[in-house]
Image (tube, rainbow, N blue to C red):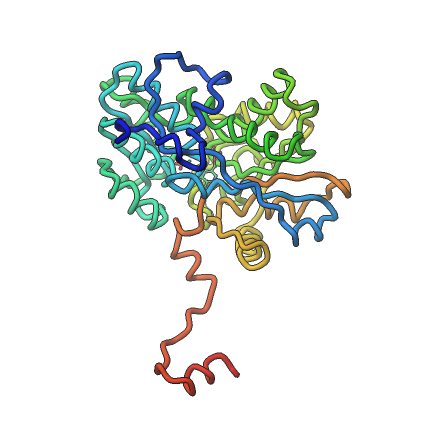
Length: 357
Ligand code: F0G
């Protein structure tokens, strides 16, 4: 049996988790005990309909295929690995849901305790279930994500706990491997990289990853980074914090992003953009992705595609949209977007009638 928090060599047909695969680019020592659940190596799916719509080659980086169903696992494997190396016995995070699910899983893999602060009433059901079933101490606060992060920063300074939000630089280091994989899968860097922006850690991480891959001679060009915020939670677009952010995409319901500067840098250095999409544009992209591309992601993830739909891109370009989390995390939103059929008798006649044969 493998020791705790390690991955069997045969996992994902030889994939050993992103720390082992990208060791040369990450701050680990030869003797570092790696905590991994086999994260990374997520599919880069060619999007037939979007490619046709935009006269381009559009790919979807489906991060919902990570062990806890979101891109957070990329940062968490390293953040927890380094926390253990530093002798930490407990980790803490604020979360709109995915970070808490990931932190809880990796903390369990490392045998340390995990405390998560989440905004009561604004967490998708699947994410809450994950954090609880992985065994985290979950505190639901009457307040939003920004307030929770403020308190977590203070806990990190005053209590013996390691903060594993993306203000922890190891989170960004781990997440930059998403850019490495895109280049390794495509064979080059795309012309455009669309990405949802909430706390802005991921856009910062991808930009770092692409730049490091150019420096290492793994690709020759850099993509234009296009960050997409939800219209009701678009502080970077507006240029000031938003006191009461609001969007159906609860994962990015954030009014004062921690990595604001990193996002602006990615935009300006890459010649990209950061703009917003409405909730109805997000939901349109969300339904379209499932129905036309066979990819079920969560609403926040669909904002990258909602952004692409609105953008004039040069025909023939290569485009990557990151789909940050799995659709199963948020069953309530899915159900609200579809008509659930009533039960019928188990007879050929009743079933034929139901399907209009
Ligand atoms: N998409 C999903 C599904 C997310 O969960 C998040 C962030 C983002 C996009 C935005 O990424 O914050 O790096 O700009 N979720 C965090 C959480 C805040 O607590 O799970 P970002």
